[in-house]
Amino acid sequence: MTAGYRRWAGVLTWSAIVVGALMAVAFVVSVVLLVRADQDTRNAAYGYLALFLWFGIAAAVPVLLALAIPGAHMRRRVREQQRWGGPGGPGRGE
Image 1 (cartoon, rainbow, N blue to C red):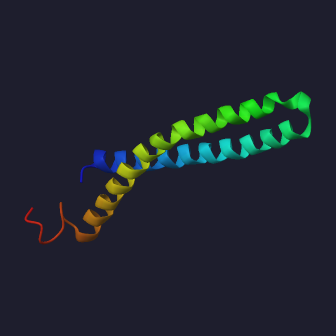
Image 2 (cartoon, rainbow, N blue to C red):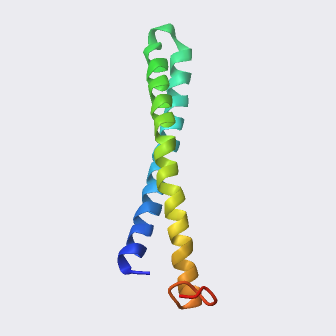
């Protein structure tokens, strides 16, 4: 594995972690907004803000998958290469 490959594996993994954390924060904020909207009818706009956050979370799911799946696969290949000490490991014909 090249240094660039290992670097991109780390970038994808950390990007997925950041996106997942932002999604978790958005979910918590949306629940708080819903509670606030439910307390008083004058705060009904908070419910719409919570709905907007849910649409953002739904839109971020494919992004999270697009970052996490390749990142996990690349990190697994890097760890496997480091463990076996070769480009593809023993018995792979490389």
